[in-house]
Amino acid sequence: MLTEFTDKHQLSKDFLHDARKWYIPLAKNIAKHQSGAGAPYFLGINGCQGSGKSTLSEFLASYLSQEHGLKVVVMSLDDFYLDQSQRNAIAIKVHPLFKTRGVPGTHDMALASQVLSSLRSGAPTLIPRFNKASDNPAPVSQWQKINEHADVVIFEGWCWGVEAQNDAKLVDPINALEEEQDETGVWRRFVNKQLSQNYAPLYENMDYWVMLKAPSFDCVYAWRLEQEHKLRASLSAADSSAGSKVMSDEQVLAFIQYYQRLTEHGLSTLPQKCELVFSLNTARRITALTEGGVHA
Image (cartoon, rainbow, N blue to C red):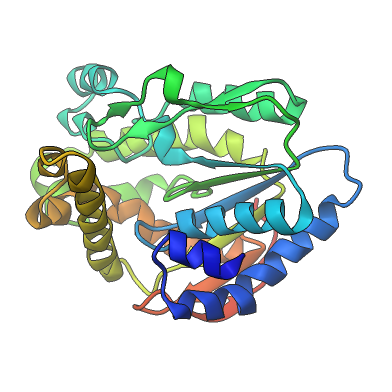
């Protein structure tokens, strides 16, 4: 199973080592917890862009289904992004920076709430999918259909689990984007309000929290570049014109500034709230495992 997974996702032997040492024990604990359980187990995974949270989620799903026969649903916060027209409407009403997907306020959290409730009840559920190349949700016909009762639901996201900041923290800009395009702080205050009102209430759905903790925000640029290069290669292989829709290196550098505030806030606050924290080095190798407190 391990070799098949690494080959499919083009992962290195380092991943094999980390999976055996760190991820399989986590998966076995989840399987043990769900042995004879009558309700789905909800696992929240936080990690900054490029940290490997999607890979971890898919690995856990593959391992739990193949080795333990569990039915696993994987969801990403990224798949709940609003479409361009919806974000443009918020940009006109609140602040132009909301044209760009990413921060709280650019996701359909009402839909996320409905999906979580539906999965908990065991009802047939559609899991949305977002096409990052077109910057719009995929057609509903391409959404994943869940017709069976799920044993485990994995929900991952870059700001999933992050709490709102204190108002005092919002006063000073933290990068060029905020200094030049959010001089009055309207954008970041609205983001913070959205996080508090529409995201935090959904955290209560999670039974267990895992964090992939990056060394610092500085790693995000290199990791995100790697993601974009892989996306460009995969799209170009299928459609020679599709690769042009992926961000350039310069666009990535500007794009990650949207994520900096909450990423740094999460790095400083989430380790104390997650049950399990995997500390990463710059090469995304796990260097330590910390069992933290219960998520508030």
